[in-house]
Length: 92
Image (cartoon, rainbow, N blue to C red; front, side, top):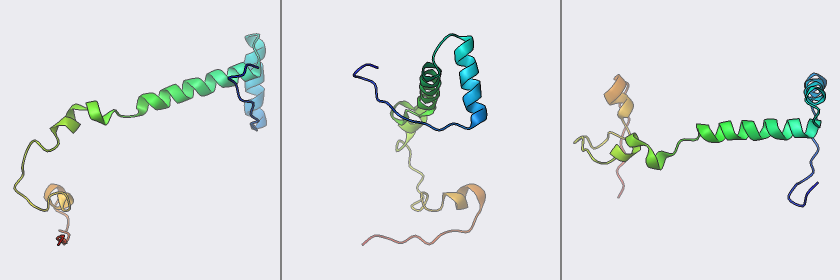
């Protein structure tokens, strides 16, 4: 184990543990290597799902148009779907 690694303990359901062990044996690798690789792949996929709002073309459109409707942010459901209008509380 290198200095840049952290030891941890994880409990697996027996069925999943057996699958990891089987894959490790088949590939002549350690179960720890299989688990590290699987976690790394999972986290990469999760990061890809994150939306970069700052570079989203739709996000850049925000604020460039005016609707003329003062309560649009509060009553968007009313204007889009005809739902009941909410009362707007004005700041003083």
